Length: 492
Image (cartoon, rainbow, N blue to C red; front, side, top):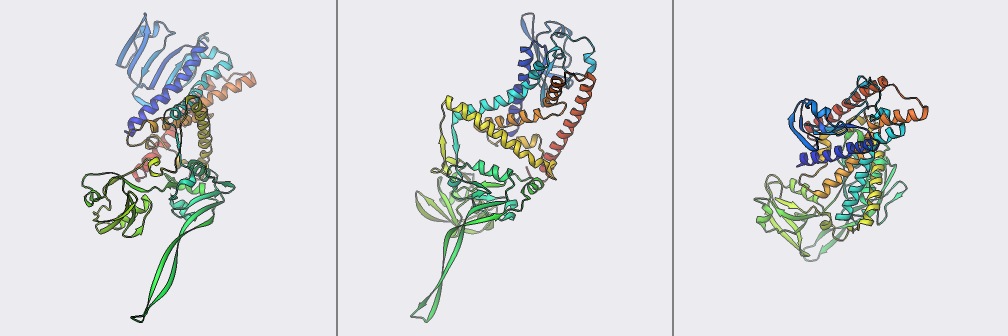
């Protein structure tokens, strides 16, 4: 399912990106010879072109018939390749990955890219980035209009968080609730995502947390009939505020460790369903039960319960749970796998019914909300790139495996479109980086021409294109090589 989601998402991103180039090219009366989804080395899955008043199609074709090339050259040849690594929009008179300077030896024609004014060429080459970013904003707006928006303010995460070992080494403890990061104060409405981004990107010097600690109150009671003394220990939970002095090396550690997460929301263990042969179902546990203890030891969060179950594998245990506000104790024997055989509730709205802020939008409210959210996402993504400039920054690069890993195992339309919008923002930003071979490289050369009134030679553009493509292929190899190493080391 992850692979299907990745393929559909990439197809959407490629089509919208290249369609941005196509629309501006046609607006300024440039010929677009070919428009391809995916690359078509050696052969194409599908080719289609309209001429003689009707559409013509070729399936699994290696060579385009000569008459297709000659008839109605203003019409575009549309195609689907077989290598899902991108796509292209072949604009006449433009040096890109499909053409070299030798293709430009003839005199410029009025319907070619190279004959257009500099500002028109700038619009054409910027069209892909522009449409990718706009499509992300449209998707976010559509998501808000259809599903609304669920927010769990930081203060409403009553069980706190589980932290990666990186943060535990810094002084955090599982269950801590962050109150402040340097001068940034967490308010009653501060979203969890904002706190995580602050922690991840600001490399803070000091973090203030609210921590629950257990205090033991010990006292003695004399037994008058047996002349001895009984020691009674009463455990009391109390909350304290702790200031954590950070090492200042958080970004460096993140770059080295490449963690999947820094902090995870602690959630209650609520039974959603049972798997076949469930020991919990056989013992009488029911759907909707909320597990809160194992062998009398309080285990309020999912992570604490799973850890306690693993510690008691192949043993008789007593599970404490709430059912309709009634505390119950259920004895059972857990198997050697240390699992109850249940599926737990994962809907945040059901896990924190009184903590979720749900916002419904009409279409007129969803548009500005989508624009705001998209712009904030871009800012956070660009800020996060500072991790790449740490000593081990290259190890942070990820390829198609990393992209696929962000999609859920089960199909979820809301999650699919949310991730597609995020990837559209990434694609827009990455394409504007001034590397020859990317749109950003063409944009820089065009801006240089507009400022200096001197156009770079076609030979220079060809060489720059070659260098850029070599660099891009190297990045592609490194990124996917990192994915392979993560897969071999079990980090996926």
